[in-house]
Length: 379
Image (tube, rainbow, N blue to C red; front, side):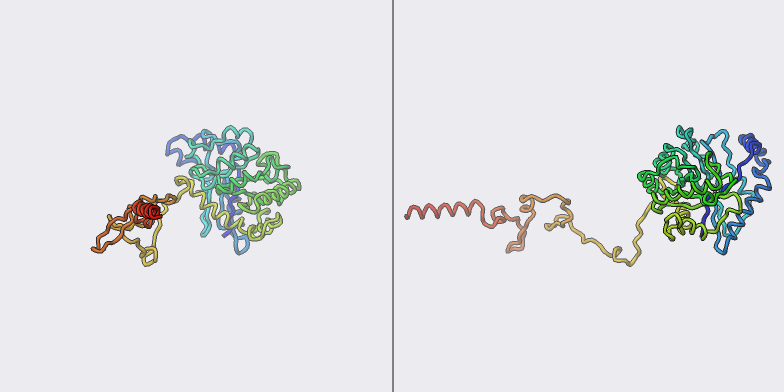
């Protein structure tokens, strides 16, 4: 099963966004008559792209994540979810799964806050995946350390701007390891390796190049990502607008091996890594990323279920070793008091300290002194 978690949707015009925002707070009767967010030509282009991805060779993509991109910050007053009406316009396909993804492009203005707060959690709840595209060193550190923690607003995807003339930040090992430990992945869009001249995807973030310059920048930055991550936590997506730039899954894996990644790792970048990512993304709807309360179930008939500890009655003279706390030693007086000896009548009596020390008590010592005095008087 091959997965493409970046199928970009065309940006809506200002007129379409204004119509959706004006009817956002009105009654249910007016909302039901709201026109679709996407025009028929736009929906036809998306349908054609999906058909191409599904029927690419005999083993095509089966899971898609439609990507909505927001720049700088999410404003609750003007934010519009454009993927919900799109899913109602797309026709259903057997064996194909559609996901919703939101990507926030971070810049210098986003360092003060970009709307990813608990107060706006209702806006992000409909999305299956949340991604951040940092373009500054401060935003990259914020994305790796803070927003990858298990919360209802966890971002599991960090999309890197590989088409810039140079990465605006250094990929520090400490930040990368912290993000990977929290379950985040670093996304590489193969559209930059193809140039994609004229694609709107290369204009996000602003300042990126296209054509031959984009290819050169992509290869240099992608090799750096593969070197720092050592092939771990790499997610390969498309990010393609034009059908001519689409590639089959095997071709994408061969493309990633040129970066110095092993062949099995390149194959997992579009299969196992996105599958586990989708599973982890479901933890946003649970408390502290816990699916259920763990419980140990011992099957019947197993040795663990049949094994039982011996019962110890109260008042027994012999105490088990487990009653003594670990790391503490019993004193000589406690051992002497607990030691017992069975007499001729079968009764238990406590040993006296003199008898426990092997006859070295005060009585034995007094007899020795008397013997010494008698020998001295005889001499």
